[in-house]
Image (cartoon, rainbow, N blue to C red):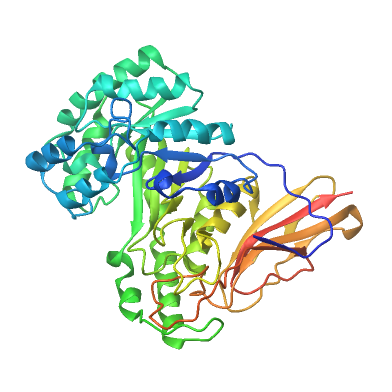
Length: 465
C-alpha cells in the first residue's frame, strides 16, 4: 500500500550495494498470491535464505518430495541422539511439522519463485548434521539445473552447540565443500560463527574458525535483541485494550526505554566490527536478525524503524543482510496471516511494518545518510537520495542546501505513525477487546518542503531538470 500525494511519482532506479533479503523459514508454508503481489512492489533485487534455520538439520528435499523433505525417521533419530532443538520445543513439534508437509517439494516452489523474480538470489542452508554430502548436492544440482540463482551455501545453522569441537564440524562440511568446488566453483561458502561471544564456548569456537585454513568465503552470524539487552524495557510492557491513535503513557515509556537501549547497545554495529577483527579477509553474512520474542516489539514503528536504519547503515559492511523473516504465521514476518480480533485489513496475508521498511531500504539502497548537526549540500546536476530516521516526537528540519531552480522535483518517501508503539495491525501488547487497526498503513510520498515528520523514517529524493 502506498499513499500517493503527488500527481507524478519518480521511483529511484537503484541496485543494491550489497544484498538485502530475508530468512525464508516458513515462507512457502505461508506464501500465497497476495504475498507474491506484495513482493512485486519491491523495486530492487533481494535474497531469500532457504530452508531456514532449525529445519536445516532435518531436510532432504531432493529425495523426499514433500515440503522440505523431512521424515519421521530423521526427526526421531535426531532426538534420540542429540536431544532438543534450538527452540526447546522438542520431538512432538517436529513430528507435527513433518506431518504437515505438502505432497510436493518446496524445491519446485523455489524454482517457480525464481521465475517470478529473475534477479532473486538464494542462500541454501546445508544439512551438515543429519544428512550426507551427496543428498545435499542433489538438491543444489536440481535447483541450479532449473535456473535457481544459488549464490551461496551455509554450512548449517547455529551448529556450534552441536559439535564437541570445530574439527568435528569440519569433518562434516568439508566433503560437501569439496564437491561444490568441483561442480559449482562460483557458489560462495559460509561457515557458522558465534555472535554471543560473552559465552566462553562461542569465543573458543570463533578462535578455532579464525585459525582454520580451509577454503571458505564468509562467516555467518545471527543477531537478536532479547531480554538480556532489553529486559528493563520488556518489564515495563503491559497489555492494553488498544484503541488506535490513543496515547498510552506506560507503553510509550517502555518503547522509549527499548529505543534508548538499542541505540546504546548497537548490537549489529559492534558485531560487524568484531567480525572484521576476528575474521580478517572474510566476508560477513548476517542471515538472521531481529528482536525477540516476537510479541514484544515486532510489527511496531520502533522495530520497523530500527530495521530500516540497520539495513541502510550496514549495507556496505556485509555481503548479505537478511531479516528474520519474510512470510510467516506470526509477528516476526514482513507478511503474516490476518488475526481478525486485531487486524482491520481484509486480506488473508497482511503487510506488516517490516514490509515497508524493507521496501524503502530497497528503493534507497544507494542513498547517503542525512545526519543531524551537519549541513548537507545537494548537487544540482545529478539525482540524489538521502535516507533518514526520525523516531522522535518532534519534526526535524535538517540543514539541507539546494538550488530549487535546478530540480524539477524533490520528494520525501516515508513511513510514519502517531507513536513508537503504533503497529501495522496486531501487536504483542494488544489484549482481548482491542479495536482492530492498521495504523502503519503504507509508504507516503509527497513534495519535500524542508520538514521531516515526527516518528517517521524514509528517504528524500532530488530529481534534476
